[in-house]
Image 1 (cartoon, rainbow, N blue to C red):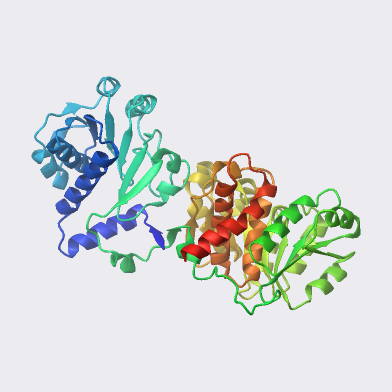
Image 2 (tube, helix red, strand yellow):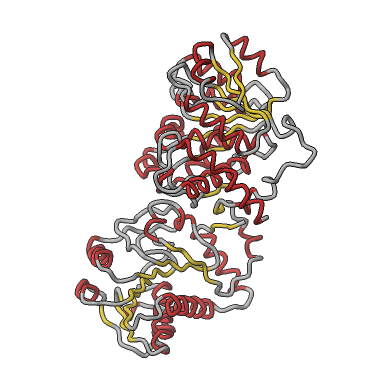
Length: 503
């Protein structure tokens, strides 16, 4: 599993390593040397470098980088932010080891430079906003065509949240140490990091046992042991029966998108449930997916009494009305895993506690919610302080998703370009494989259906949600530019073949 460390956890990893006998100055030397080697490898034709150094340990890394680049006969300039007489600790020793000149960092210094810029100003643990004066330097860096390599994280990006602290430098390459941080994957930070590399600087992985990280980069390391090819002697109901509730006659497409995804991802039987007026529209488009009709809540209850049903999806184009609310509450009384999407969430905006209570009464049977930003804000607004709401979803997305999961009892898939999956037990995964062209109508319906199909096959809630989100991103990548939601599920065979082939 790809653990992500918060700023405090990374400080703990450093401290534990130092306690075990590796001096901090050795870690700094290792970090600077690793970045210099990366630069020499990836920018081999570059001859001139400008190292932007801050007054702390990030600046110390920068002095090491400057020294190593100079050893390889590169022309190196160093621009220092602040008073060099105030530098202390390991960074002071690295400043003393640097044999070249130092210039005050200024707009003029940056604007006149042509070459590779190394951003060693501020690390991931930045505790304050960047001033407008320093921000002017950042603006010049971002406006130029010079390649930029960031040490740890681009200056101005919060390592925990990915938020911009006033101003930020945009890098082409970002090199961090030991493990990535949430801010490398959360937006907008991810867009400022671009390609992120992780360097080994001598921290042993066993420190993670003490740190006990709860945030991970989403990927097969989380769900791979659960997502397996079916056994040769399995039958369709053993692979899982999935029910998807349709909207009215004019709103049937969303349910079909979800149903097709559930079937493609491996559920053995998928059925669309609809009222009589929606039968013709659904029947005109469905072949391997079955249709069952209900005319009342009692009839729906009778259908859902089938013990073979493993997962139920409700929400896509279901309608924001009392009927949807009643159906959600009835579905939550079953023993099947449930995916609540779109209208199944919005219909409880005025009384989320009713929904949360019904989820918490299920005694461990998983429920997965898949809200986008608007739905999340409406359903969970009571959980967030006014300050958190002003910060928005990017600044504290992991914290918000985790808090929502714990309050509701559901696994929460907080959708977006940086989808966050949270479990009631505090585990969080950040997804980073989704291409931008997934932002299209119906894409979320496919995601909800994929998760439902995985739950039907017996994946636990967190693993099913993580797998569904990751597979969804992979579908989008395979489908490529110009995709529409109807394309996605048909890319699942290729995506699953690749996954099984790499296991």
